[in-house]
Length: 423
Image (tube, rainbow, N blue to C red):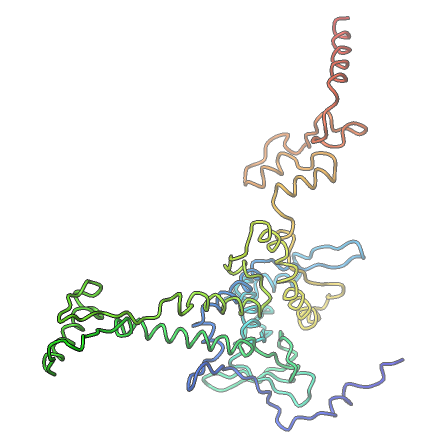
């Protein structure tokens, strides 16, 4: 048997002098300007747009608990304690908010941490990654999570925590924030935004300058100062004539010297930032509002692939971590597994479903009461019977949408029926 090396032997190969794992937490955007990951999410609109897109689209999916009965059969466990925990993680958090926070933490920090608590019933509580310090002496697992607060800290054993993390080539025990990868792009956006802010704050100072001819009458210092003061009071900032047409004397001219948005490429730069952030999270550009090359057909296809190629890896990672760290805590966890409810997102519109099911079954597939229930109407008497057209019979037409019989056949059938009536 090839499995002969113990994990303890491997752990002994690399022992850390300090048990505290460095976690980072800030990105330098300019000289003397650093922002932590939370501040970047709060102040960088492109980052918030992309992260919120991921978190909201995953959080809206229900997560169901099933028990595998066989390779071709399963049963949903709606009353299982695990299902109750996921539907109401704790007394002050809904399922949606917990999943939204979990995905947001993963997108921002590449780490998300849920503490397993017990106050009469099991509960899951989010721990802010900013205040968590992982502690371990080996290179494979975290042994303790130190949660810091204003009054001290609490060490939580790894068995009482559900830790979601991404890949880190330098340390597999803790994720590496995408904000580090986007540092240069975010720095450029910060610098450009700072420049635009200065431009607006300075008013007309950079919009142009006044040019006075060389042969104009001599201008004393007092007259020049009065003109400058009068100009600033009237035509800059909140002056009463700001935006108006000035009257210039002595042949003076106003020479524009501002940089237009087109020349500065403000719009292109901001769009590029969103494109880079979206690409870092593998999100199609039309999904976050960049519609330069979008068409109806490719947007439709991207919506279909959203929960497969874009969000599929996230959903798989979340469910597998829950299987590994949470499901075994329940006594009857054999053959129990979790699954996000993707059926509502992947089955298409009602028109597409109706056409597919009708073609597959060759007959009507919904009763009147089932149809009324879809639009929140009450049931009616006789509505549970499946209405089957006369041409949808075994050996007859395969589907109500099939081609009707030839007119000659219909005429012959009608003639025979009439002859039978007259007799």
